[in-house]
Length: 232
Image (tube, rainbow, N blue to C red; front, side):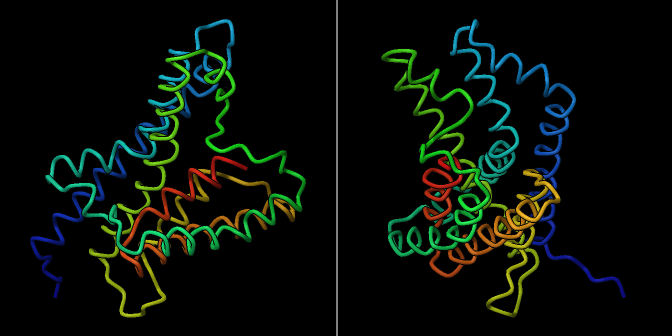
C-alpha cells in the first residue's frame, strides 16, 4: 500500500521543492545570461557598486534566497539551524579539519596563489573603492559569500535529514545531497587533479555537515566558507 505522508513530511517536501525551484531558477537564468553578467561584473570602467550588487544578487539567488524564503514563510528563526554559541569552537575546528584534504589538493595541483579571505572576482576593486563603500562592500561579501553559502547547506541538510532520517549515525542523507550539489555547481576537470579536487570537495562538505549534525552548531559551515572556500 502507498505510504501515507504525515503533515510534517508534506511540509518538508514543500520546503525542499521551494528551495530547489528557486535555486534552479536563478542558476538557469545565470546559465542563460552568465557571459553578459560576468562581462559586466568584470568591467572596471563601470562603478564597482552596481557590479558588486549584481554579483551578490546572483550569488544569493543560488545560495541563500531559497532557504531564506522558507525560513521567513515558516517563521523559523535562523538560530533554529545551529547558529548558537554552544559547541561553536569545536564545530569550527572540526569543520576546518574536514577541509584539509581539499586544501592539500589545491596546493599540490598548483592552484594556490596565496591566502586571500573573502576573495571573489572583484574584491580588490571593492577594497580600492574607498570608505565607506569598501567597508560596506566587504560586509556584503562576508554575508553573501560567507554566511549564506554555509548557512544554505546547513538548512538544506537539516530539512533532508528530517524528511529522510537515517538510522546509521555516520550515514547522513542531507550531507550526501549537499555534497552532490556542491560538486554539480562547482564542476571540475576530468584530469587526475580535477577528480581529486572533486572527491575532496565532496568529502569536505560531507564532513562539514556531519560535524554540524554532531555538534548542533552551524558556525563551522559559515567559517569554512569565510576562511577557506573563498580564501584559497
